[in-house]
Image (cartoon, rainbow, N blue to C red; front, side):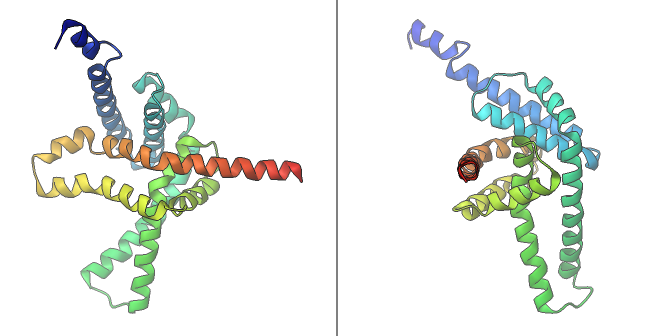
Length: 222
């Protein structure tokens, strides 16, 4: 490799430095989310702030990750927290029901079990989009939850959302079976899957925004 090529590769805006910057930013975001989610109440605001930073990173927007994360954490705290607590309550109810089914301590009709399982799957689909929606739009808890489910089932969104869920869950399944993977999860287990998922849901957001703009234009014409 020539000196000129080497300088280009190691330049500030070269591929090596950009990759290192991405790795460091993902590491910082992962640690920030873990620390800021220790009180479960604040987890919603932490995940929302992370997704806002990841979206900006996917668009190659410049910024300071730690400073901007903390700024987002503060500015989105109220709406994100209320929305998260509502979804957490529903998730807790479904989780308790599923545990009862799994343990087999109480007998339930098969139809009731399938209803709970179906609602649990639908819940996961909406939850995957919840924090990206809160990060992207200035909205109310009710609308954020509505938009999350609309986007999760948007066009090809069913398969796309399933892939997103798999990406979030896979690192933790691996960590439960491979002890050496626990450290990797601690460093990148949240931010890295979320960053990959940005490129999956970003197109959905853009389609949704175009549809909303078209609806607004029709409303103005009428």
